[in-house]
Image (cartoon, rainbow, N blue to C red; front, side, top):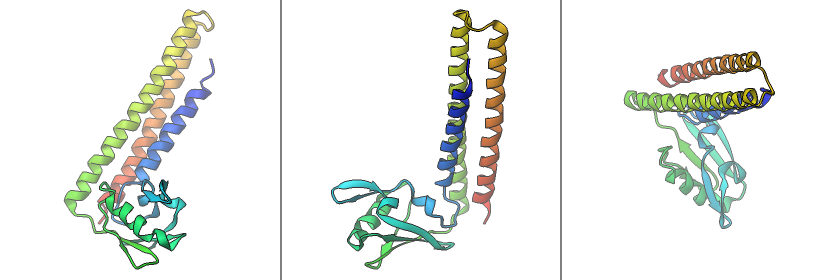
Length: 183
């Protein structure tokens, strides 16, 4: 039985977790903070990065420069309407400026709780992948395509992969939490 498929799934779960962590605010401006924003332009919803360039020229501000200046109002509205971000952008007719307010201690703790939920979601995804691998190994053993020793070896390898990836998630979470709590 080939376990490379499950290793790829583990890698995909870690990559997804890293993307989710990038979206979490830390009090400093970062272009990735606006990754999930969808803008309605030309009669369709498009990701912000397809209708504008996003940069962080200052630690407390994100600058959004639309490719077409007629979309400035739509971009500002899309950012303002994304409640999870809590930003209040302003536009000067050519650019959209998004000030990043300083985080209060209470807000930092809320963000850390949100991070903890994302950590748990990532670990659940890893456990689900492990269970899928175990089921496939058990079916293969029952079909006599692998021996019981092979099944145990495969399960141990998968368990080791889960442990290694859990440690990676914990390390990423600790680094992000330290970044969030740093004033």
